[in-house]
Image (cartoon, rainbow over all chains, first blue to last red; front, side, top):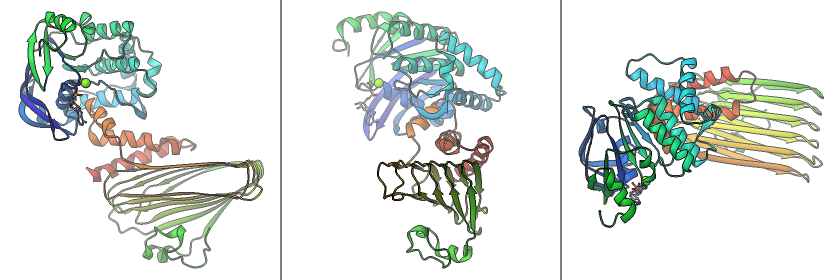
Length: 246
Length: 255
Ligand SMILES: Nc1ncnc2c1ncn2[C@@H]1O[C@H](COP(=O)(O)OP(=O)(O)O)[C@@H](O)[C@H]1O
Ligand SMILES: [Mg+2]
């Protein structure tokens, strides 16, 4: 589904990703762990196409398409979802309005009929319930006044509504209490654990991986994948830190 | 406000952003008077469009004189949609415990020069005035707000607020904002805030990451930006639709 080959990227002229390679197949869940400042968020932003994150080398193919040639909104329409470490507040624009425009934009670009207001609300209500987020909150401006945990649950509601092929989830577990962690973990499983989908979990901690069991675990340090293994690698990292493995 | 008998020069503070040739064309300006009797309440929506996006349109200027008697209320909503020079000026005189709301939106593209000028005088005690002005400027356009709140001697308990914000869509666009206070009374609550900015890049990326194309993302954020100024209008939905139409054409020119 996703093939990253030798990807290099700079932020503000500073090289952050330095020849990163990673392959993710449909049906797989991968976790990327690594110390602060390793470049984990930079990887997510670069794949999402954030302005200012400049690719200086390498290729990324997403379901056969050259991902890097697409504008950010086209990457979304192609089936990529980026869960933000720090979800952005958009004053004055409600979640419902924003998500309906987002979903219908994606659908139009795939030549699918847009959802009516009623159809959209039904879908939104269903996904909000899955993440135990009060539907009333989706009538409020995007992320404004939401707690850290509510923002992360709202990210997962968005993922449920947009139904991507590949989700890159950047520290979805940070800022969550134990109940919210379980709810988000179960949400990820129910939305994304399917044969035709894949997930890249970016995380610091083992704890999310107790709910969303990864098939592969990678260590990102110094802008590259320095080690890959199975779920046992996450446990090992939890006990021994990054020093030994990286 | 300035004497309307003679054509002002650009040295006049009230007209400093007006193109010299426009003044000769629009002069003299008829003053439209609105009177709200004691205890009465009224509202007005002004939509002004100088048309002709190619830049050849005629300049337009309106001058409103608004007199609110004691305990009168008035809601004025202004939608200034474009033109080589499109000015709406309001001079308001507030009686005792009267209330005035002015919501103003200006959407300037290409080489538009748009202007809202207000002079609100709290002549008697306990009147309230609220002004919310939101301007958007792209291309080489300029959007100007000149607003004075004057509190006369003895007009204690006056409460006047101006909130002025502008959003620039291009590096060659200009926003001028000059909120002013002139206070000759005691025990007065007056506040003004003014900010010129650009659309939040992180917000635009967030919207894009969900599948919303750049022009649509900007339109969504700008629609939210102007909303506060339109909330007093009875026909807000219609105004939003007109603004949205204008915004999407304005953004077409930006991308
Ligand atoms: N916008 C930016 N401007 C300058 N440097 C940045 C920016 N974003 C990230 N960096 C730098 O890139 C490096 C990697 O950051 P990041 O990808 O956020 O790491 P991680 O998510 O693994 O903690 C850090 O050294 C950080 O300081
Ligand atoms: Mg990070």
